[in-house]
Image 1 (cartoon, rainbow, N blue to C red):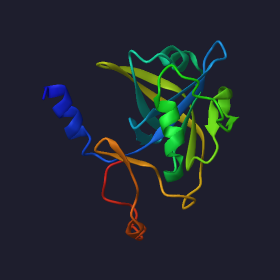
Image 2 (image 1 turned 90 degrees about the vertical axis):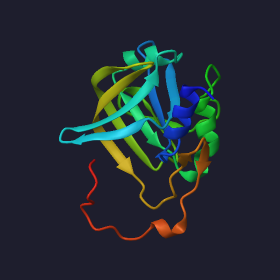
Image 3 (image 1 turned 135 degrees about the vertical axis):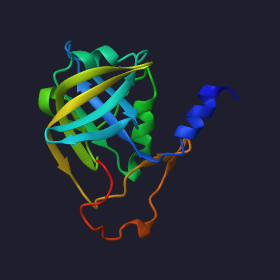
Image 4 (image 1 turned 60 degrees about the vertical axis):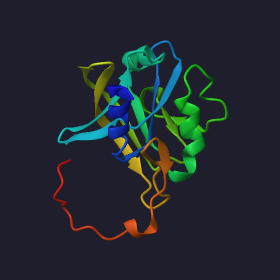
Length: 173
């Protein structure tokens, strides 16, 4: 097994949520990609990040867009995640959405939406790291469990996760 595969397997031990990042490119085309490279960066100012591979067909649409939407998927949206994970297909066939800021699509049924404006881009090796400023957001806490990804597969949250937390948690975010 080569080092890249071993590294990918080791990274797969970190459970993540699943998002679809969407945008309306400068020429009006809709772009959307499933990813798990999404993270909070800062609360003041409100910044989040995601990354896109340099070879991604829709990279230019994201770079030319004035806004992006980050759609946090629910556990019942696995098929939607798969639809946006396939390159060079009609990702928008049958997708129910409303236009957000700058026309970036907000996917129906998502647990949370973050409508964002560009803040900075960074070299991330074979990816571009986008840091974006949250301009508007909404959430439907408790509506569904989130869609999770771990060890190369979708996963479900067990019911015992809903214990009350003492805020603020002692983790850095």
